[in-house]
Image (cartoon, rainbow, N blue to C red; front, side):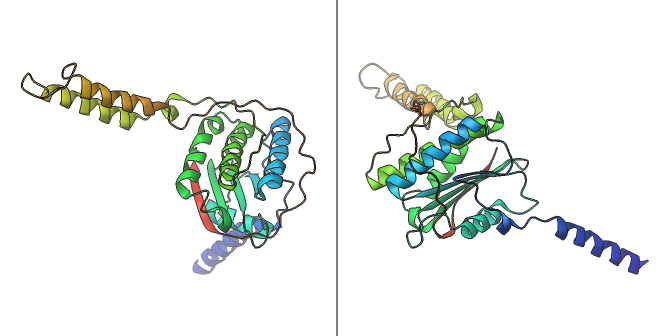
Length: 261
């Protein structure tokens, strides 16, 4: 009985091993490698053009990748393997970015090359992934990629003091749960009630009575409710000139951020 059980376990492991994906066999299809087949043609062309302009203007290379599933592996490991195997970014400068979407796992990862880590800290990377969530939840993967690429490109251009002059069309609609910071609003409301309760006729209230300071705090809290929202720039239908010519041998140390949607 134990012999049969051992053979069954070995057979199951063999099947699992045979079905595992060798991520090193994946080859880039351009700046955009849509192995999951989820990015619409118009978005893909815009992204290809935009990434070419970013590379030509700043020297940084972006690889935007989708895969159907992680096959049970951590997205950090998969992203790092693809990044290093492709060599995103120019060798020596290591100014590359890999944005990976695992569709069925609903996981995302931004892998940042050594050379761009000072310009794209982990906190910014995390906010970019969160910004993608509304479009990803609506299965608008091209729009999600454009939102991320636009923010990344603008951040790199600003750090290098260059102008891209290449806005991407943004059509993402935030859901209430993504756009409203409920913990901050509730905390501000409780603080407001506490201040109003403590403001009596003998307490200092300044000009205008006890409502001045609470009103100032509430206004500040509500003003942050739209933090992170960005306008939708128009897309001019520009041509990238020369397109994707391959990645340049860059490296990454695992910096970046991961998220889900």
